[in-house]
Image 1 (cartoon, one colour):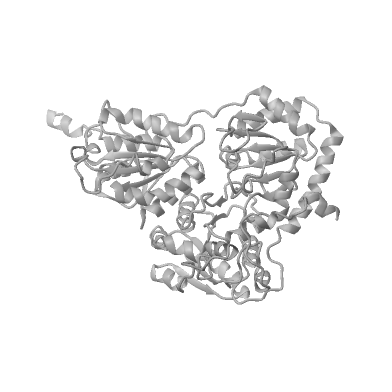
Image 2 (cartoon, one colour):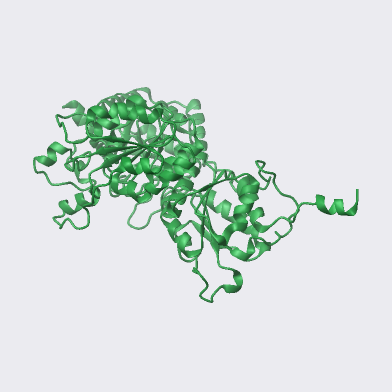
Length: 597
C-alpha cells in the first residue's frame, strides 16, 4: 500500500462538535430537537454522525418541551439546541418547565465567535448568566481542552441529587476545532464508551429506614404521598407492596397520578389543584405521612398546608426538604433513591412484625376512604346537555377507548382538572404534564412521546389558548409521520385567568379570544381535522382519530359556563362565583366522616 493510500485511509481529526456529540450519545441521548442556527453547525454535524436523531421544530420553545418530555420518558438526558441570544431565549420556557419537573435534559446553545465577544456581536448575550440561570447549572466552553471536563460535570450535575436541566454555551468557532486528546470516535448508532455521567443513586441509612417504618406502623391514619421520584426509580409496584405491608393508602403528588396504578384498592387519588375533594381531607387527617420522591410544591401541598404542623412525616428524596422559607423540616429526612429505600424497607419488614390489629384497622379505614374517593372523583355525572361537550364525559370516553399503555399529555388550564380527577391511570410513566403550569406544552410533549413510543396511543388534551401557542408543531408531527391525537377544548378565552378575574371582582381584561377553526388549521398543515359540537359525536371522533395514520386534531366546542371541575356548568349558570384553586376544599369533611355519615 502506498503512503498516499495510508493517508487517505486515516479518519479526519475528531472535532469538538463530534466529541461533544459522542459524550451525549454515551449518556443515552437519542433525540436532539432544534431550530437550526449557523452558530452550532459543527455540533449538528457531530450529532448526525453519532446517530442521534435530529428533529427540526418550528420554534425553540417547542424543541425544549419535546426534549423535556423525551427525557422524562427515556430516563436519560435528551437534547434541545438553539442559536445565540434569540434562540436561547426561546428555549427558556422549556428550561424552566424542566427545572420544575426535575428533568435532566441538556440545552446546547451556539454562542458568537470568541474573537467577537464583548464587541456587540450579532445576537450576543451572556447566555450562562441570563437564560442559564433558569437551569440547574450552566457553563460556557471556551477551549477544546475544557470539553471533556465540562461535559463530565454537566452530565453529572444534570443527573445527580435533584435532577435538572443544564445549559452549555458553545462559541461558533470552537466546534470545528480539533478536540484535545482525541483519537477515536463512535460509529453511527454505536455511542462512545465514555461515562454517561449518571452516578449510582444513594442508598438510604438503615437506621433511618427503621425509624420511618416504626412511625408508619404506629400510625392510625398514615398515608404514603408518591411523586415523580417513584416513577423515575421504576418503583411503582414496590411502593404498592410497601403500602400493602404497612396497611396504609397511597396518594399521588400533583400531576403525578401515574405514580402507582389507580386501580389498586389503596390508591386514594392525586393531591393538589382539581383533586377529588376527599384527598386534601385525607392528607390533613393523617397523623403520619411517608413522602416518597415528591417535591412538596405549592400545588401538591394545597398552598403549603400539608403536612400540617402536628403531622409527623418522613421525606425520602434525592434532596429532601430542609427547614427554611417558612417551611418546617421533616421529622425524618432520608437522602436516597426511592427504589433503594423501598427495597430496604421491604427487606426489614420481612424480618420484622407489624401489629396485626393496628394494620387491619388502617386497611379498613383505607377501604372506606377508597369508596369515598371513587364517588368524589366521578366527573361525567349531571343533567347538563350542552351546548358543546361535557368535559367529564370526554374523559370517560377516553377511559373506554385507550389502552393501559396509552400516553396522556395535558397542557396547562382548568380543562385538565377533569383528567386529574376522572381518568384512571393503570401504568406508571403514561402521563405528562408540566408542574410549572406552562401553556403550549401539550402538542410538543405528545410529539416526543410518539417518537419515544411509536407503537403506543398518544393523546394530548389542550385548551384553545395553550394549543394555539404551539400549534405550528403540527407540521413537525406530520413530517415525522406521528399518530398523535390532540383534543382541543375551545371556550375562546384564557379560562383560568378569567376565573381569577371573576373571583376577585376584576374587569375581564385580555381574557376573551377570537374564534379559530382548529380542525381547518390541522388540515392546512397536512393533519386530519375533526369538529365536535355534541357529546354524541365524541366516541366516533376519538375512534377515528386513534385509527388514523398520522396526527389528528379534534376541535371540541366548550360552553364558557364550564369553569373548572369544581364548578360545573350548571353551578355557574346558577350564579355561583368562580372559586380559587384550593378554596373548593376548604369546607370538606374528612373522608372517614363522609363514609360514616
